Length: 230
Image 1 (tube, rainbow, N blue to C red):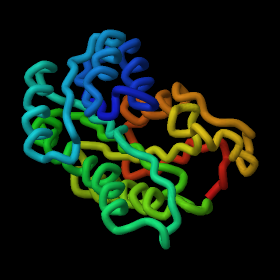
Image 2 (cartoon, one colour):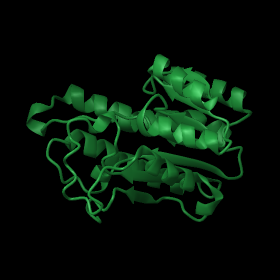
Image 3 (tube, one colour):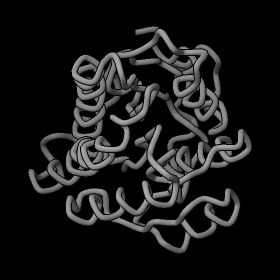
């Protein structure tokens, strides 16, 4: 199993949960020091890389396949939160958000496909966002667009790669990670009236990679505490 964004947040908690379930892991992130901490916790292969660098990712995917004896699953959890109204955000910042949150997931997926396609029941889970389903907060235009793109990418890949590879997106609301710093009080429109614990999102990801979800592909699962009911 390959997990990107594994140095922190949802990616790290997902890696920890998969390790507890006995999965062999290849962990990707650009933060080498923090990634090494996750690797020490999970026994995973530590592969520091910038997911927007296509050549570097291709090399790392080959290393991951060699270390794991193939690749049977991918979780694209790497991403950045970006806030700013459209009138204040220049195109270069817009491009950076799209490059990391959307193009990065595409690059990693494409790089892993030669090995995923050799497996009978391979899975891909892309971390999108409830903001990609219903962008109802100001200052999230670039972020919401990137996450809506991740949902569209997931659905397109689900059609293209079926029936051999299942592809789904998970759409969290606000999660109790560093990304929520400064915004933790913004849960008044959440039916459950709280942030998610990262493990709650990790469990949903685990479900989408397991045989229990064997008839689910092309879905965008809202795991957002009833943020909007969409």
